[in-house]
Structure formats: structure tokens, C-alpha cells
Image 1 (cartoon, rainbow, N blue to C red):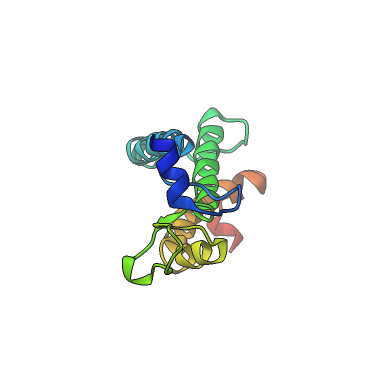
Image 2 (cartoon, rainbow, N blue to C red):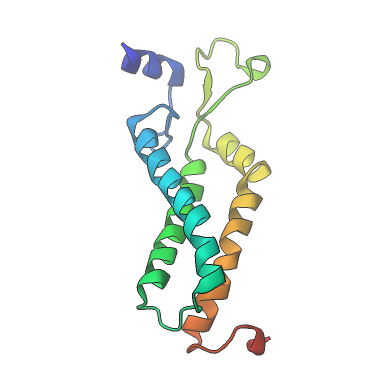
Length: 142
């Protein structure tokens, strides 16, 4: 019954547009929650007590890049995620409570959380650039 109601809510949509209550989103929310918890708990320890990575093969460096990848993938998911329409903006006769127009979904994300999401990835450059450049300190390259 729930699947039927989801189909009625969405109307016509592109196959890559994701309903917020789709099973994939439950899985994805768990993955991003684990990544956020890991970042909140491990990053302060890494910054305070561990030396910066010198090689791309170090386990800490690899794990941190995988976490970055999850956050980058989450940005891509946000461009495909339906959102609940404001009842005042609902289209007459559409029968859909969720926005399925990819352009409107992208515009909403770009106007909202996109900049914050991009800025949250930028600090990773302070780990990546020195490793890629051969282990030199980043500030000395400026």
C-alpha cells in the first residue's frame, strides 16, 4: 500500500529522480550518518595528535578520502532528490506533493545547502595537496 501511495505522489518523473522515502534513501542516510559521526569523532583527534599524512597509501589518508567521497556523492544525490512542494506552489491537477522537475530540484539545492556542502569539502585540500606534491608542507608552496 505504501509503494502505491509513493507512486501516486510522484506522478511522472525521470527514472533517476529519488523519492525521499525510497529504500535507497534509508540506506544512504545511514551511510552519511556514519560518515558524519566518524568525522565528528575522529577528525579532532587526527588534527590534535597525529602528524599529517605524507603518502597516499597511509590508512588514515585513504579512510579520510573515502569519507570525502561519500560527502561528494551525497552532493550528487541532492541534485536527484525530490522535495515536498509548498502547498501554495502546487500545480493545479498535478496530484503530486513532491517536486519531480530536475531543474527545480537543482535550483533549490544550489540556492540552499550547496555552498555549505562545497565549503565542507575544501579543508580536505590541506591533506591532499601536500601528499600529491611529494610531502612538502602546503603553506611553503604559497
